Image (cartoon, rainbow, N blue to C red; front, side):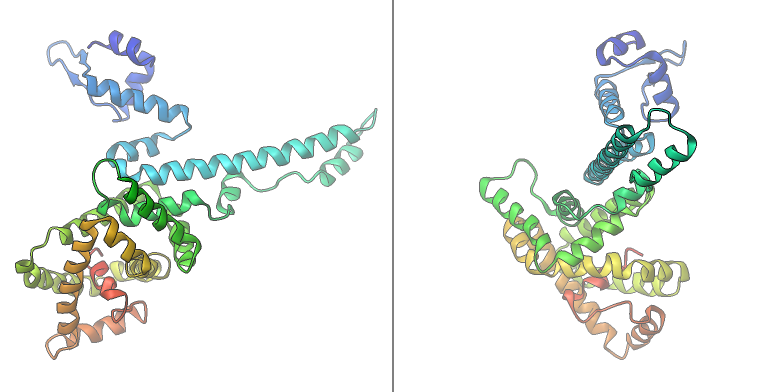
Length: 327
């Protein structure tokens, strides 16, 4: 369809369409002879999505991230919800403060009386962004963390009633013994930039998919790959520094949750996750045994020296060993 047609179909102006093309959010085919754009139905759907996301207050950078990696949508929806709640809270405080000032204004206010009223009104001093960071951990934060951890393992298509029950059970763990790990991960994810979120969601999926599709005959070769990756990681200061910075807030809580009581529920909910656990345990056991052998002793010594206590390969089913290959 031509530019005029897609404008009518999506209710987006020509100016905005050209802007989205310039920003790389929309990439229609272009006639090489006359330079006119030829829009497809997929372009139409994409443009409608962009329009709706803009109406909901999402930035261009956020929309670009969503279009590039739709799996990050849970993060951006959660972030926008927190922004709106913080904004709502600030508006309520402003409304109350300004009502107080209006009710107490003298008939002939001067600057001194106005200053006193402003000081006593309780005007909010923090920005909406700061207020957002002080919001309590909520159900939407639990959903964000669970999707980050488990989405790659979830069955395709609609869940059965029993699977829905199991998934709701997984979400309830955020208020129990695993609550602190959920809070740590939620704060960490909310502190990431758009590029970091895209990288971590994509990297998390890639890392797990490699293990999901392993065959038992590939365990030894994958273990060798892990050994090489770990040695490479340990001699690169930038990777080590990033590991140490994120160990307490991201790596360790993720490993604990993957090996917590939640994992037993996920085994039942997702055959994919059950297979992943079998594979990752088998491979990491091979790497663990190698590290404690004469051949791997130097690597283990380097790990202890370089990471300075920011690792625990003896627990959590050696989940941190697998995490090291992503660095």
